[in-house]
Image: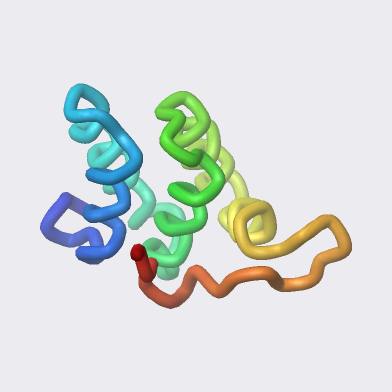
Length: 95
């Protein structure tokens, strides 16, 4: 998955969360998610949410997604009691 294949909201979030020097690396790393799951847009949003602008954390979450993408979804969308807090299958809505 290339930047063009990433949903527009994901690219916008990368631009918001990462400085110019890190954006290309973040986009490239997120592009590798298409091989991890059919739900690559949702998983990309989950990775971005958990990473919160930290490139190293983004890379860790992508590695986890390649092992079991469901762990990334749980980390981003659910609390400790497994109550769903957000639905990242839907595009980001930034203010």
